[in-house]
Amino acid sequence: MSRFERTVDLDALLAKFKFSTPIRVRFCETDANRHVNQVSYFVYVEQARMDYFAHLDLTDAVHDPFSKVTLIAADLACEYKAPAFFGQTIHAYARVARMGRSSLTMEYALVEAAGRRLVATAHGSLVYFDHEGGKSTPLTPAIREAIARLEGLPI
Image 1 (cartoon, rainbow, N blue to C red):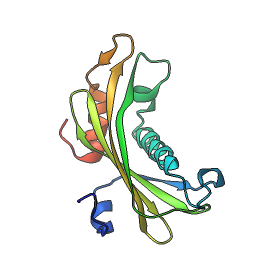
Image 2 (image 1 turned 90 degrees about the vertical axis):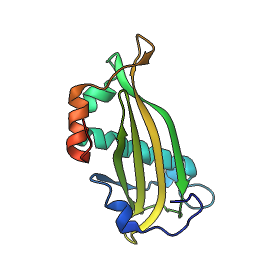
Image 3 (image 1 turned 120 degrees about the horizontal axis):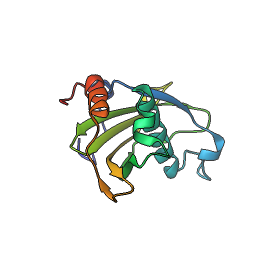
Image 4 (image 1 turned 180 degrees about the horizontal axis):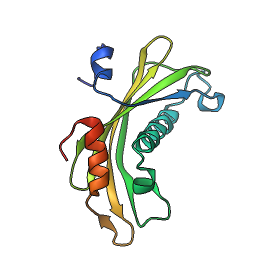
């Protein structure tokens, strides 16, 4: 989809996702314009990512703060489609769209639940990073297998 295209086939978009998590918009996430502040969407994406890995029972494998190897964000971009407001429930959809040797590309869709309105889309790269060695390291077989099983990707 062109970044300037405003119409989206929501059903076709959401058919790509096999995981979602609900997020209730808190007052502190809104701004003087009375809608969700742009930075809050990155918090929603992070929550969707964390819940995605928890759903796969991979939290310790990818985000254990005491491990020398974790997934780190390499980049993240968000395109805002419509405003969201305090008290609304947003469904945050997350998926791994590509799995490389030591990296993942994730995609996200944030949908206002009551009206089934697309609020934002996002995408970003994660790198499996060896903090002691200071460089990327291959994803483990357990990580690859869990993601491949859910997403239907090759291991």
